Amino acid sequence: MTIRSVAKVLSVLSFAIVITGCGPKRVNTAPDPVQVSKREFLDRYGFFITDNEMKKGYPELKEPIRPFKEIDTEYEMNRFETHFWEIRDTDPKTPENEFRDQIDERIVDIQNEIFWGDPDIQGTRFDKNGGLRGDMAHIYLLYGAPSYKEKMNEGAYHGDLMVWYYIDQNEKPLFRFLFYSKISGSNKVFRNYTGYLEDTLKELSSRGFLSIDELNEMWDELLRSDTSGAFRAAMFEFSYYTDVTVDKALESPEPVALTAQRAKPVALGQPADLEGHTFLVKSPYHSFLPAFLRLGTNPNNGNPSFALFPGFSDVDWELKDGKAEAVFDLRISFQNKATRSVKEFMTRLVINSPPDTDPQTFLNDRKGQHFPLALDTTRNWTDPEKPTLRQVIDQQLASGTYIVNIYFEHALTKKYVAWREEVTVKNTAK
Image (tube, rainbow, N blue to C red; front, side, top):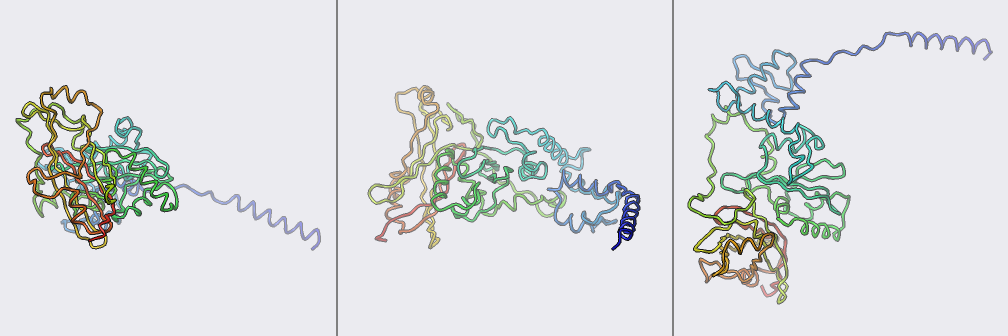
């Protein structure tokens, strides 16, 4: 190619570049106001839109409203929003919509980061955990502030952990939400309720693959840190009620008007009547009974041994016949992992201050201390002829691996703590 030919080609290319550069500029169009309204509605109230509203809309109305996903006009979006709140109004006779007001108040709580300075879970922020669309906000918007909450800082094998407990009218744990953080640092709610310790630890681990030895070290770390037992209970049992699952708890609630047409709400029960009872010490906890479990080994045969350690200041002590008294109900079940057979032990434990001792002084002198409850030789005080826990383990359980569920409850005030453990029984003769 000659120099003249090259120059001609370059000239043509330069002209093309100039023409291209002088072409019409791209114009930024304004966002569709309908899509903006839908996005804002989703951000604030998305957890309350049911699957039917999202996919079917309101076809039963005289002037039907299309599914939320298909709405593309401001007129229909306004109608959808109006009807959405109308069928959720808990008291249509009043000018206010109490349900919407409650949700809006919770949104303000989230935006104001109400848990940032909370002494139980200090430093917890919604904006670091998905904002209004994160798991923490999801639960807070549905159920409000938890009855009990606790935080466990990052360990060698797990990230930050946090539990939110919601207690029903029976003073039973309706929900135990367990939050955990991975490498990203954002808290997500635990859902992997397989019942197997190894699966649970792998899910909660902040690392990658862990060996069996590392999983054992992680479990020991949790045992040391979880003195109240709240985290271990939430790891293995989401609710006191077997039909309540974490997925059900996070479903969008049905509108009040539709739910009322199906059935009236069922009252679960009422707390114990404490009228006429005088308490020397009232636990600062609303429904929880902090205590730690010591799982040991019987030196005679290697079978498991159990002891509980409640705190003096964490228990409700009643003045009874001139003494400080606390009464507890204990239930322990053993389920054989191979056969699925279950053996249960139940008893009532009555703890009194020593005679000829001022009960208030006795309790004041023991603030911050724990008292041991050795369970092995425990009998049911209502039926002394029943076998002790030691006899149940050594004489009634076949050799094998067992899932042990322990439920410890104050008999009067119904405050409780629960554990789930895995043990090995070595009754080779059985």
